[in-house]
Amino acid sequence: MIKLIFRYLSNYLNIINQKRILDVDNVFKALSDPTRRKILELLTEKDMTAGEIADHFKISNPSISHHLNFF
Image (cartoon, rainbow, N blue to C red; front, side):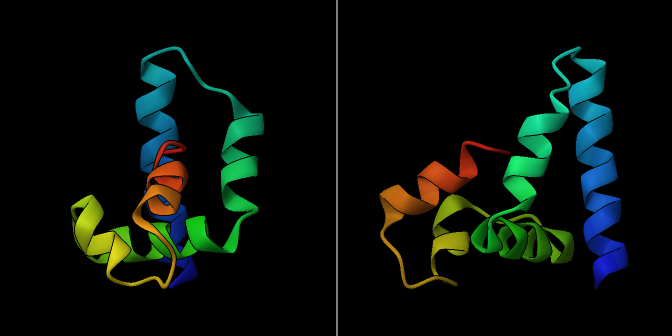
């Protein structure tokens, strides 16, 4: 599972690096939150809409939206 998360993170870093907006501080800030780590874990399994991601959590949709702004 950890291997998949790092593969997803590596892909993410490559994408944002290509756009020349790499900000390592924001990457580690995103990873420091357990909800965001769970979102990354879910996304390693398959692509999901925001609603599908929200279904896995017992927090409000605006809170999920806040977490997704880091991705």
